[in-house]
Image (cartoon, rainbow, N blue to C red; front, side, top):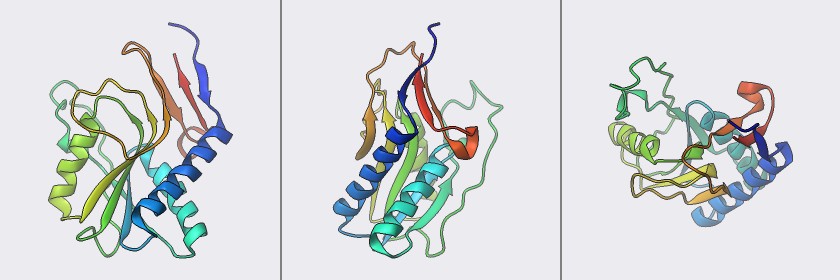
Length: 176
C-alpha cells in the first residue's frame, strides 16, 4: 500500500466547513427550525463545528445532536463487534424540523441509509439533508450529499482517512 497522501489539511477542512455552513444557511433561508445531527464518530465534531459557524453568522444557536446508527446497519452479521455510541437529540426534537445529517466520508451510502432508518424511529422531520466533508463516490445506494466539502475520486481499493483534532489530535484527510 502506498504512503498516505494528504488531500485536505487543517486550513482546507476549516474552509470546507465554512462553505458548507453558508450553503446550509442559504438553502434553509436562515437557521430557523434547523437541527444538525452528527453521525458517530467523526460526524459529531464536524456537526459541532458547523453549528458554531452557523451560530457566529446568524447570532442564534443552532441545535446540534448525535446519531448512533450501529443497530440500524445492514452489515452487523459481518461485523458484530461494533461499539455503540449514544444518540442525543437536541431539546425540541426533530419533528417538523430540517435535519442535516453530518458525516465525514460518503462512500457506499449504507451508513446514511442506516441513519435514515434511525431518524424514522425518532420522529418526522420536514426535510432531511446530508452534509459530508468528503464524497469519494462508489455508491451502492441512490444517496447523494446536498453539501460536500471535497469530491475525491478514488479507487475502491484506496482508503480515505479523516482525522479530526477532537478525536485524533490533528485535522487532515489522507488517501492511500
